[in-house]
Length: 83
Image (tube, rainbow, N blue to C red):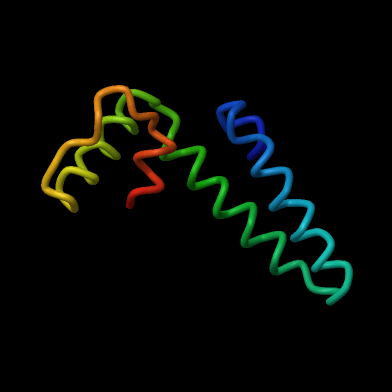
C-alpha cells in the first residue's frame, strides 16, 4: 500500500530501503526496522500527495533557510537536498 501511494520517482529508493529493512529484520528476528521504513515512506507519500503544494513548501523552506529562493528550474529533489 505504501509503495502504491508514492510517486514513481520514489519507488526505487523505497524498494532499497524496504529490502534493507527486511534483511535486517531477518537477521535480528525483529520487525521494527520494517515498521520504521513503512512509516517513514507512508509519511513521505502523504506529504507529497499534492506535488505542486509540496514543491512550493520546499522552495519556501529553502528561501527561509538561505535567504534566497532556489533557482527557477531547480527540481524539488535538489531543493530538498539543500534542506
